[in-house]
Length: 381
Image (cartoon, rainbow, N blue to C red; front, side):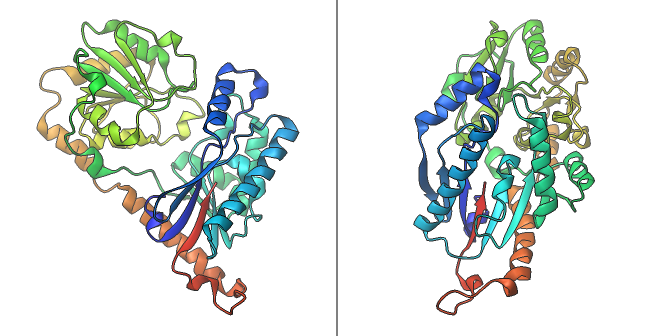
């Protein structure tokens, strides 16, 4: 969206709860409470990029889902009015739970960007989400998946899904930043993971690595959606969420980076952004054999089960493994996978949508064509 904001006005909608609190999951209640403390807010973070945090109404039952959608539509349209976003509009859907809003936001065209098997998440209404995914796949004008397994899901629903994989800020992660302060004093070798701590994480693999290290530290950087008490260990540091701008410093300090995911229906559709960030930083990587990781097997150590993670980590820590030549090979492996190129590919497709539908768009009250505005509106929900 940062790239799109150079030519579009982007209204990015964040913090919409998808999991239900009716399951009684205490961590989901904690997330809702945290979001309520942040309150609803509309802010402009840079020219062209506006962020809306709506009231976080959880989809608890029929009334909760209806209230969430009514409020979300109201807040999006109100934000567009306040920001005077009057150009032709594209509605961009990432969360399937927002599917009922398609066609109600004054959009000229719609995009479905599918990047996770949301119906496989814990504490969600799986059947409802599958119906909503199908609805977006069949109804949106442009359907994009971030991984080939996801695209196959959408094609089975009758969609002409395109695959545009995730990118990476190559230059941001390719530098040599100093180590963050909270890593100073931790024992090396340092084995690290950056990302959300959720129930798809292979906690057993992480604990096994911590148990079998003769020396060193396992570092986990990221917010948590799970009970982290099972991860308490003398060699394990849980640092919590860190700002995106600080992440390159952590990766540069890690001796080995992990993608320790359980292999299941959810993760077989995952295209891990962290993999490209690790490689752009030139770091050795040990990963679960996810379908979207296998093409990088020439620069990644694969561990097919929890017990294989430690031997793979050992290989990466052995003298002579992490050479300058190998670091450069890792960086080169993702050098042409920048977010600039990914955004450019999608932007061309969006312009096609706008131009195809221009003739159907009514003129403004002063006779101008809406597409003549200097910036076009894009609403990701």
